[in-house]
Length: 463
Image 1 (cartoon, helix red, strand yellow):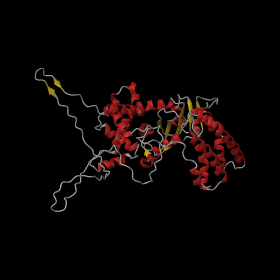
Image 2 (cartoon, rainbow, N blue to C red):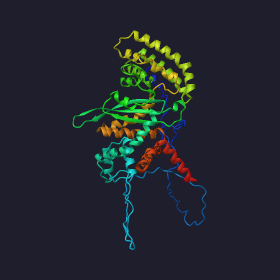
Image 3 (cartoon, rainbow, N blue to C red):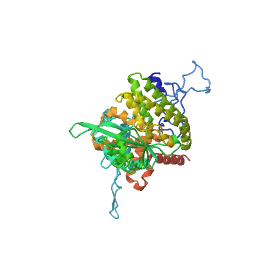
């Protein structure tokens, strides 16, 4: 069995993220349409009808015509995006009787002294953090239609906007830390210094998503940015958290689980990831054939197959099935790994792959004892894909403030995606209203609550 065949055994246990017009909990049916086939044009798109009348009958015929049928051809059209200037005119009036001068109050702009509407600001943010268009590329696109906005100006606007939306980002992260189980991970990014070269910064990501265990609480994701990968950062992020943390074997997480001095357990319980363990063996198979690595992949695949059958089931049922089916396979896998490891050179990649799950075995099998837990950390890795895609385009983060602003926008846009909320509509409305919104009602802008409120308003208007 080659590596390609082995990878096919690992269809992801996690469902794909819902599209913007899909409900997060609804099952996604696989389309029977062939790739590249024609799809119906969306019914909600506006239609413009062009009436094409046939020519006259044969020469000299003046008979009355009756329509018996019609042929309709629908062609998808595109109206290029265009800019406009909104002029807010406030006439100053004076009363001839009392000589009182009156004028409407100044217009509240989303950002003080920034002559940009919430629609434009939302478009810039979504283009940058959802569609991965760097500021420079957006500036070039705008110049083609005669609008000159420098990329540094866009960056300053984004940092001001991040300051405005910061309370919402903090509330979102607080909501995530209320969960009994969260997923954690990180990814590197180049951080430019102040004239002293560059270094490697990191985006940390924390995810709440329990839909696989039948919990329909809204999913959410939060990013944080740091200038290095020190363990002090996740310790700060999760200082008040109590519950399960599912993450990889990064040593920087160790202080979360046990006190470094006394080794006493803390309030955060480690949950291992079998995808990371599997990857150690598939990396070996990518380079050369290995019967031991191939068998390890097959054995781990059997564990993932069990998870596919119980996806979406209640926690008690998931635990029951795992105890019956997964626990015996895990015990056999542990004995097999120990046996293989004894016959390998301790410095070999294969020995290190065997030791990875063995050295954290209790964390690796913990998912069998609680149906809320997952077999892998793939959910949070999916949340990081947007950063990985964007990093290829924008290449680096220009400053700490820029990294912190990016982390906030990735949090908000990622949570919109998880909940099937169209991000540009959400950003437009929130940017427009948040400046005058009571801080104690900030939850109104959480994407799932905003979506529910919008649906309610639409239904009331339709009635």
